[in-house]
Length: 332
Ligand SMILES: NC(=O)c1ccc[n+]([C@@H]2O[C@H](COP(=O)([O-])OP(=O)(O)OC[C@H]3O[C@@H](n4cnc5c(N)ncnc54)[C@H](OP(=O)(O)O)[C@@H]3O)[C@@H](O)[C@H]2O)c1
Image 1 (cartoon, rainbow, N blue to C red):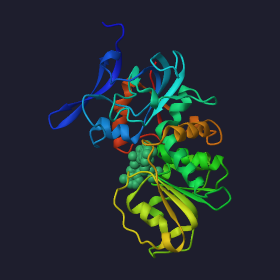
Image 2: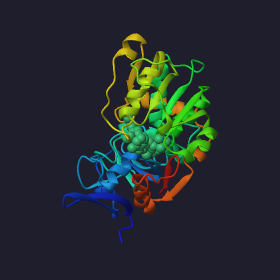
Image 3: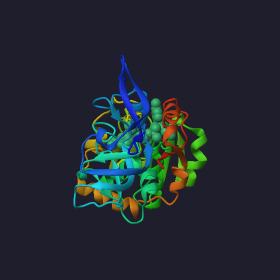
Image 4: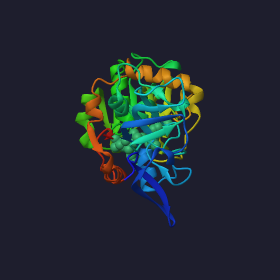
């Protein structure tokens, strides 16, 4: 057996579809890059589940190692900015989509995508946050640049029991916002309250009216569901409020009127965690290590699995039977 070999969840074409296998690879078989990271943790995102199950066209080519997130220690570096042993992370920079990803013992990656883990976080907590935490932080950051502030009224978070949603609830509550969580899962209500939501709305009971403008109920909203759920929010957002559009788990298309935008000055902010410029990425990780760091990270990403168990967790996630919050992948 090759002593440099490590396990990696690699996706290959198989007939019309794809097949995911836990292969053994060596660093030379990975996509090029100046840095080789000895992975310690990754995490399971909705996108990873789509990629590994073949239910979404996430990967640009095959074969490719899955996993859009990784944190670990630099093993070798051809870039002076990083040296062996440095604690680093990579989230949503194309790994697991265009280049080999984080569900592997080693990850080789371009130095421009590598972020030094700021003090206040370690490889484990960085992956408890992962792309989901980064995305929630990006949405909050953009909303705040656009005038959102604690004390301005409640913020609605949809898809609240998911990774992005639950982290957004905890971050907003920690920042002093009044948070209203909307979730399809009755069993998530108590947990969302513990994370800091002051009010919980069950998705199937949500009634925001059907007029182009309704009485304002929320100062802003962070939406991970998309489709009709997103469209129904605009009429109930207060003056100058922001709606951050993050996900499409509940649909891509929506129909809305322009009135909330032109009569109340509501803003729709698009959130793309992949294409975030490096300077903003560093700012956001600083915030994730300080004012946006959720107090109860273990309650949000308490489920820890071994690399070998990734496919089982993917199946559960795709069947809607995943745990509340996030799943951490430990790569010893
Ligand atoms: N824009 C970006 O850069 C970016 C980055 C990361 C993720 N995302 C997107 O954000 C969304 C959430 O990601 P995640 O990693 O947090 O996923 P996740 O952990 O699987 O959470 C998704 C949540 O959405 C709700 N949901 C799922 N299916 C739904 C459906 N058919 N109808 C309505 N609600 C549904 C559920 O929450 P409840 O049961 O509580 O309602 C679920 O827990 C995904 O669409 C993902 O692709 C976007």
